[in-house]
Amino acid sequence: MRRWLLVLLLSALAAPACDWEHYAMMNSIPAEGDSSLNPRVRVYLGLDGLSYDAVTRARERGAFDGWNLSRLIPMFPATSDASWTRIFHSARFAGYEFGHYDPVKDKVYNKALGGMLVHLVPPLEEVSFMVPDYAQTPAYYKAFDYHASSYLDALWSYDRPVYGYYRGLDNVFEALAGRSQVQQTFTAYVLETDVVGHIRSEEDVADVLVSLSERIEKFKRDHPERTFVFTLFGDHGIDGIAKPEDKVVDFRDQLHSAGVTTVDSLEDADKVDGPAAIAILHTRVTYVAIHARPRWISEVARRASTCAAADLVFARGEAPGPDFPEGLEWVSVWREGNRLASFGYEAATDSYFLPSDADWAALELPVTFAQDARYGVFSDEALFSLSVDRTYPDFFFRARTAFEPISVEFPSDIVVSYRYPFMSVGYQAPISSLNGVGTAGSHGAMERLGSTAALLSEERELPPVVRSDTLLGFFPALVEHIQERGVELIPGAQGAELDYDALPPPAP
Image (cartoon, rainbow, N blue to C red; front, side):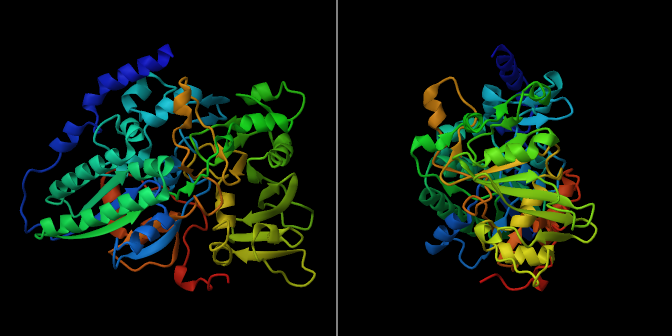
């Protein structure tokens, strides 16, 4: 505790030199400019937790009339920091969230109360330098001209989410009015949509989206000297969690009941007689990341799949037999103690090898095979089209890339996708009343509830569904702008770039 008080003190001391401070943000906005410059300004708003269902509700009430709308399918697990990193192709984040396991140092970082503080009080490079174990600021923040007005915005937003949302919009549009005088592209990040989704209802999220639509139209009327063209996009959806509180669980307890010992390092795991693993409890999400020695991965995944909270358990896998080509990357899928399916991936051809004896129907995936075929070979485009409208959207690509170091430097060996309406209890606060905060909605699981974000744009037409990895390809001005802001684009996952025009029609 003393160490974290030091972190907060250092944060307070360093804050005046940080762009998060309100005065720094306001002092960077031009007071006046030449109205003949930048006659057309493209505005890109990243709204955390922008749910497709909430957007649909808002549009039924007249919001975003005439805008182009797509479902935006995020990475799996559908969690914010890693997902934003992947969308912007920025430098890798350490783990799926601030709490993560570092296999190089064999250590879990930002756990328990420390993880909660890092989640609510964003990291500073100054503090990271002085306290090496403290999380570093994610690189994707650089993609935004505006992402907060004060250092403790996230903390205040969880206290009063709707007030925080409107306060944030005030600052976004103030910044836009000034920056548009000197630049043709503007980017902003709005955290509070996610907070409203976690704490309030989907109808409340629809309410704040209706107000955003009205605010955009008012802003355009108030600034006729320029044409403003808006695009909105999210990092994941939000699934409504039907309390009771007994569905908010500590998955480590369920693993213990299933015969898996949970530890904080693999060195400790080696001392255990039987299966042992590191389970990372993140914030209030609907997945759990697990790390294990290779010899225990399948057994830990099998036992984890017997837990009440588990819907599907994904794991790094092995070929189900000798009939498959060598060199494939395999993923196995478990439910209720059974391996339902596994599939292999060949990077050279961007192809998937699917065994015909897997229980694809249990996953609601209508895969068909040639008669007597041991397996089928499918393109990424074909499997995207087959799965994107199903219970688990973009199943194969998302499951495979969950285990690749794309936006995440240290991906896990196993990912547990929760069964609705279970939720991870996350970090625990010493004040028990705080542990019920944020249980009205969540995200992270493979299931479509929290895995369907939205993409809205006045700038261009869009396909019905977009893989979030490809978002930058639709907006060259956004790419140019974030590069000007110092974001170095890192190549994405193989198979990410889909030819949407060439895709077969959606599955019936």
